[in-house]
Length: 265
Ligand SMILES: [Zn+2]
Image (cartoon, protein in one colour):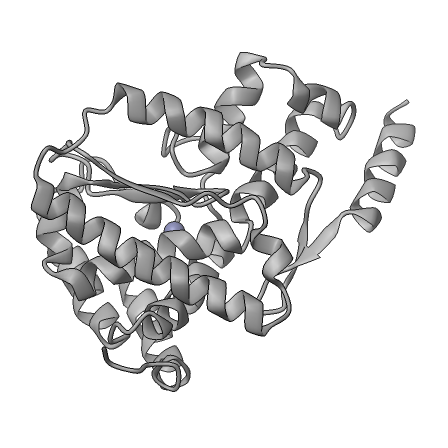
């Protein structure tokens, strides 16, 4: 029985791979875009309804400006690569959650973004915010949530009845989705993997540059992250490090490529 299941799972893997833009990495994909986007949309509504949302209109306007510029850059990039279909079904939203303790942000599949007020003292300005938001958007458009979810489904369900599991509202499935999107418990099974973090940094630099933000600002941002006082609740992007030192070294190496895309506004 076990052998049969393994074989079945193996066959599914062969049939279910996608390729990450820019890096060209092959990834496991057992969940369709429309399934994952619809799941994310439901989760997003729940999170946003709970809020509380920031009532600081200046903060909200800044997050939306940066978000929409990054959205525009990503859409242009995918169109130029003849890959616009990968963003089909995206309905971008950018919200600010009032929580000064959470130095965090995330983007669910389908372009559903939340930034927590706690990260804003560290991002400091629009350019710093672009570092974080471009990184989060990169996770989404590189389908990292879907990849984590596929891996989680294989681990938890042994690769069986995947679509049946997804179509139910089983609490376990919902929890899996939240974790896969970087929203759930940071100690959970499905934190983004180290390779996904490195990939989101790489893509994020290019997307922010395309959006007209100086990618060199990423170094200063990560130095500020390193120096921040509270380590109490590690945000999504610190959950499975690259350590900050490794991360900054990687970003230094990738900056010359990203600068080629940078046109100051
Ligand atoms: Zn990340």
